Image 1: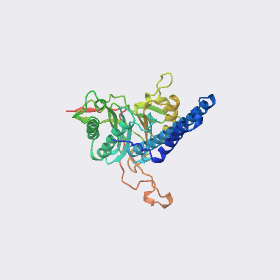
Image 2: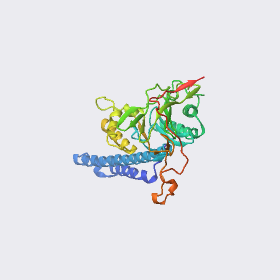
Image 3: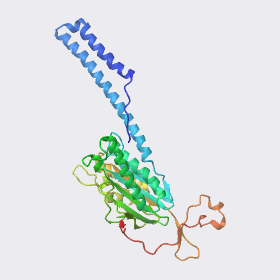
Length: 387
């Protein structure tokens, strides 16, 4: 559980209000002018007490603002550790992510995202915890800690999802015991029992093949040239928390992320944002604006979407929002002697004049994949279960 402890008032901070209060009482009891009943004496006495009261209010206000700044600083530090910045490059993918919290006091939210390069491919998680603030940040920490271990250990995305589900259940039990020690488990009428998390797990293979498992989360958008389209329209599984997972959740293929194409993952706070007249924010329109000028970078997509979102909500979003953009920057070159076959070609950092002649135009490492199917599935087959 994450706590932010307020700093205890120091002797120096309490000395000034005490001095002002002592001066006011001394004036009232010891000054002869304060004992008079004339109009001038009363006005002077009122002015003295007004000045003392104003000073006390100003002092308390400064102290509260100082504590608020410290709390925000601590909350930002906690979130930077839990929701750590992603690397700009990850196994040939250009990555950019940003999060905007609706809790302006604590500057933290309940959105989570992470991208990790593993031997199984680049694995990505995007999720949304019910609520926002420090309580949601504790759930985010539990889920991200589990994902960072399971992404390397589990050969299939279904195993990663089961690990996340167990981590969430364990976290909610511990939180319920901490808040209500007399109960052996979460009370059905208690808010902890109603917690849920939407989660999208995505795996990007070295050849760009996509596999996904979705538990109640919005599907990403695929940016292909100047076109914007949903990755799939398959029905997701229920969110984690209130409903049990299938015995064997199986990730389904979701097409292919070709070089130059991008995926935009987001939380539902983006499309649920409303303006003053109750109109929802149109993420596809903002993405069409972002890809109008080619080539487009993930940072440009984030900047365009968040600028449009803040303009739509007049700078006051009511829910946490997060965006994660993945662009495939892997280069592919034809294999010599193989018609139509391609392979990934990582860039050689040495100038061309200094490269060995037998490496000029060819990668120094073995190919990550050979060939590409003639046609990739246009839509995801969805999450399946067996047993």
